[in-house]
Length: 265
Picture 1 (cartoon, one colour):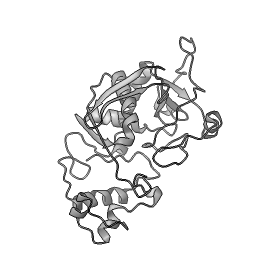
Picture 2 (cartoon, helix red, strand yellow):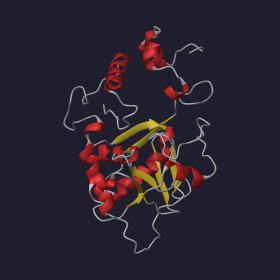
Picture 3 (tube, one colour):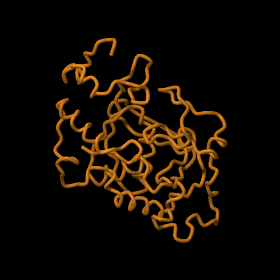
Picture 4 (cartoon, one colour):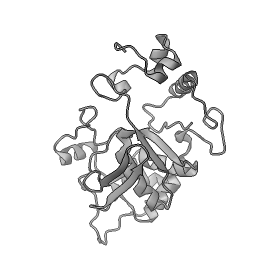
């Protein structure tokens, strides 16, 4: 059990404990986690800063990153047309939710290939200097990233078309979802990743990070999402019912695990 609590605005101790309690009630058990410890502790990402910083430094020293000073307003102007999320129909934020699809970066701060420009400014390898701007992973435009999904079969994404230079370190001094997952999966000897099909494109980005860091790829299994009557994935932002709410309404773990819920839910 790994608690992915990197977003300070959404992560509170009470929420974390409630999540653990609800999963226990549902009948899910784990052998390692923030509540019981284990050989790869800590199991809360908020306490694993040194792991992510080391991965960031390796990417930086390898020449895979460049600093991006674009503000939210700058990106909104550069992107011009709003980017729509296929699953929600909502406009994607240029500084996206870590689990949402990141719009293709227009390249405003991207150094030219072969440029003699010094990307790393004096002192930029210090974490205090890294704060204040985003660090982006530069992709090779036109490169095809292919992988075999254990559920959905062969997948193929093209860098520069399906996704662009993506953020691995945020200006507030924290890692992105992509970097944190890659670093933790490697450090914790994760060999199989099972997650929603909405994160297929994230897998392509994480494969590039694994390659840059000389890390092995786990096996990938992307499953369909539980959606509401409008076809949107269940999320608090859409006022979807939480596991806690269903529990309070008298549903049993078997009702939920088998999908035997009344239509009005």
